[in-house]
Image 1 (cartoon, one colour):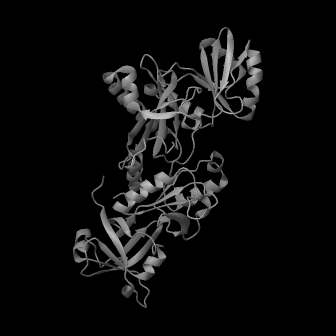
Image 2 (image 1 turned 135 degrees about the vertical axis):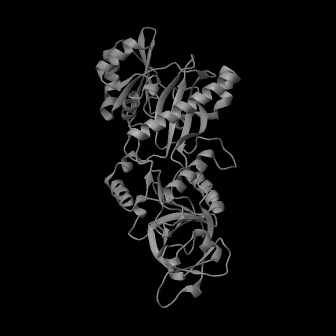
Length: 457
């Protein structure tokens, strides 16, 4: 990562305030020399959305300290927060940039005393907080309603309790809205536009449409061969696909977590249909002809748009469906990297390997070693990572919006061919093994937060 950052500690110094209402910063002579600040020219302090002209003075303090006037602390909303930051000096504009200030955007629930006001992100927040405490910066959680004109109403942990307070505008916003409806709402678009107008990057800007991603990847020669044949569902498409393949998957175009997926197989001269969720989950239905099958399926297709996809006979683990989730993140230099890979093994009564449907997580290397041997396992791991990185880069290059992480789901057949099942723009935060250490994906996110929080030199 870039080595031009310094760790600095901000300290409020009431004696620096004066009747002229200047915003004053005191630094050491050696830091002034290191940054080559020209005191004859204007100097600015940048933190979040706020850029303030400041008066820089030198005094005998530690090199890694900034003494700042009380009025400056108040205007940048830092009076009750951790005061350690990464700092970078941009000589061209004579600007001292402090950060990162990370806002995790998600749905805010009704607040219970001291409890997390949101779901499923507590572990991520605590990991980021731990890393930020050592490195410098601020991380908080907020909802769409939290953005006002001069500050953000958000939540941070103080003394192990969640507290709501006025916080500075972020240097980067990490979109973790779970609701597709909210993510596509006018409210979200208005907030997103305001952030972009203020040059505040927001990434993971939208959910993916499964069919749009399929069409996009189909144009990539190196990726096309890894895609199951897929079309929007119609009765004619269903007839043609059933003539070609012994099994099909019928998936909601905008679905997630393995919900409402239909598996079709040819069984003893009849069409057998199973659904992954809902009241009919444990019932296998049999149909003598396509007309009967379509009559049963048509109500599903009227509720939501579906895809009809070629079924692939993936390798199984103990007779249970198996696939692999590869998490990919952009690093500090904006390059896609595979940060973790896990095997997902479905429960015995399921045909989808999603955690929400009872699947379990195992180390990918251990599963592949057991199935194919050590040498093949290492080769498959490398191929899975390479394919996932190519897929993430292709989606990023040809999609609108800003993306910094993706989860790529891949299946492996008996001939060791890899098949892309789907790509997720907001992958689950529960996809890595439990550990007392910070997860690789969290560290990768933090690296990208830093990239987005500071202006290019």
